Amino acid sequence: MHESRAVSLAIDVVSDVVCPWCFIGLRRLEEAIALWAERHPETPVTVAWHAFQLNPDLPRTGVDRKTYLEQKFGGPARAREIYARVEAAGREAGIAFDFDRIRVQPNTLQAHRLIAWASQRGRGTPLVEALFRAYFLAGQDFTDDARLADAAAEAGLERDAAIAFLASDELSEDVASDESVARQIGVQGVPFFIFDRRLAASGAQPADALLAAMEEALAGQASGTSGA
Image 1 (cartoon, rainbow, N blue to C red):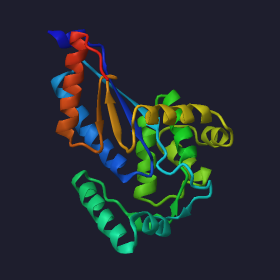
Image 2 (spheres, helix red, strand yellow):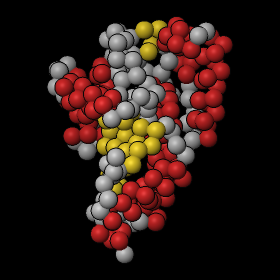
Image 3 (cartoon, rainbow, N blue to C red):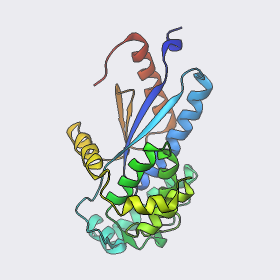
Image 4 (spheres, helix red, strand yellow):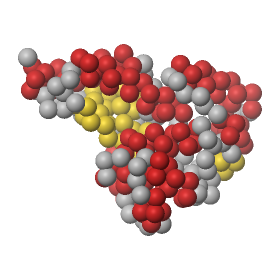
């Protein structure tokens, strides 16, 4: 069978840690990967995370989240309406968003640097999960490196090493390069999924849609066709 020739299926995920749809997208991707494992146990999946700052111009100290959302969406009523839809989608994905606990809208450069650092140590996905949970469920302030280091520890990384890393500028250029590439290929919103460098899907697609893209990418891999 063609599939037996495939070594693995690579999935690149472009996301931001303050994007609730990215958290939902992670859950839907996990569901798709579980279904994939049942169908293609001989073809493992690898997931790589790539940085995208929705608000790169925010100060390092962040801004008041309530004010930020009201300005972004044109008033408190509109902000509540939009986030009610996000909460409903979150419940369907098993996520109990607690937006009221979030006080600060942060600049996410430090978080993305930490994800790159964790990825080098094979802990990228566990850290992304820990960061989503810390921000959206516990309202942690990501302008505080200590809170980011707490998430690193939860993901199985050495907290003191994370603190030392965050105090440096290491991997800043890598994050900037990631963002530049994402914008060059046309990413305007996240989450954005790229399957085997062949197919792309934008938004928190349902698990069956992600699985279909994975199947199509595998078929292209087997036939030797290249992707966009």
